[in-house]
Image 1 (tube, protein in one colour):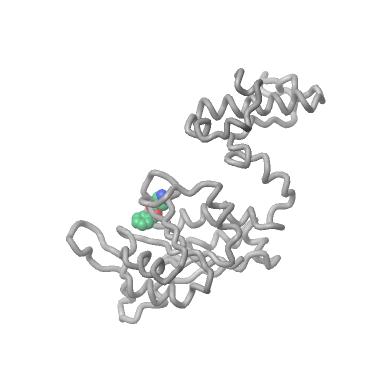
Image 2: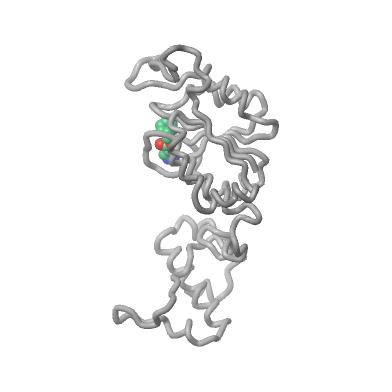
Length: 241
Ligand SMILES: O=C(OCc1ccccc1)c1cn[nH]c1
């Protein structure tokens, strides 16, 4: 998979040289390219923004500079991702879908955002454009949101994570539930013990205990996820909880 990030703060993305994503690049699993948007400016001041039509505070990023940049970076079949507070909320489902793309291009907005004609132009040109939010808060730019989405996607690329099984039983994973609580050695710490069932070696009981905790935790913290559950996936024990 090829991932391109276009930003006026390309250094923000240098953390991607580390750890998981860094290793994937070395192993050729991920072709990550970071570009400075100002590289596509033509004026002496390397201007990327201007005042908003209709007035209002702040500045808007110019469509012409973004258009020149994206025309060069986008390959056929690429998915264009615009991180924005006013987008669809990014979920594990998006990560799974994006992980199968040949190329992802992240356009990092700053100021009050990117001229709306950029998304419109590329949609009209048949490019799949995703305006995605990582949560209901406002950041100064799309770089951090891009890092979040790149990590969520990159770890799903086959060969990325050592033990693929560790990807399955996850919060927001296939089961659609939050993760159960996990424990490890030492068995006794701060006068706190391990739930007995986990020491029993009784795998069916352990599995049941974990599912009960996941259901309880999801019902308590994320009732919206309970509502979205496929009832057919619940057994009579679940329903008795
Ligand atoms: O702030 C965000 O993106 C940066 C951005 C992009 C466009 C205009 C202002 C800010 C964001 C918040 N949740 N998800 C994304």
